[in-house]
Length: 281
Image 1 (cartoon, one colour):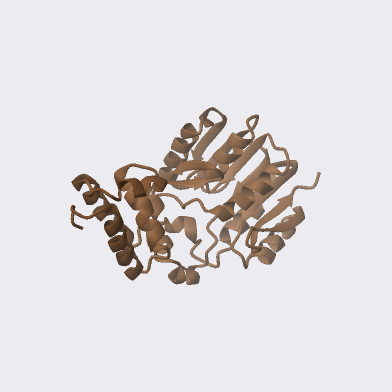
Image 2 (cartoon, one colour; image 1 turned 135 degrees about the vertical axis):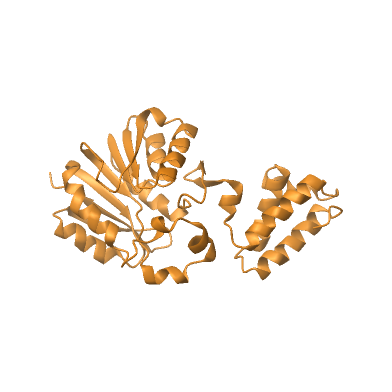
């Protein structure tokens, strides 16, 4: 990429490269990454268009576009992702926070809770958001991945909930103690035979253990259904994110475990996204 190019010319060339690489929205990504290279807001990119690009900006932009062309997610290049109105630090060690997970947040906040447990913590976006929204609550977040626990801890500090959040390494319930009035989880729910069909950004750059259980995609729900009754207070709730075809299967697992008031909640696109259940009181 020539350092004599204007920003507009650079974005045109970058958009063409990203489109050829199969990126879904190449013009948007080219703009966002130029703003990141120039260390300005994306809305201000046009302000540098009349001028030749600074060589340092041009070099940074070239590196970013080259990485995006091999389908490194934009969030990994920026080092952050927005979720429920807050910015969360992310990396290749954690699942990228996604808008559809906000359905779980809304369902959790629809009722009161004082003590929450987040299993399969990842970036911490669920636990941190719930504690930030419910300032009287405390919580525990658990993940088998130590790097994920470190990332979640950093996000807890970033959003000033670290004094109310305990983060531990645990294989589901193995290191969990106490009882909770809310358990939440966005577990790995992609079946192994579905992995090859995922977008390259997800399949090649997000942690496999956060995507699939290596089986039919229901393994984590079996663990949650079996363990949750021992860790929920009377009338305590269990909320899990699911894949859009898994509602009936997960609901059946929860029913067999003795949970009640089971509901399948759609996301904003009308797809099944969350299963909610409760311990009888």
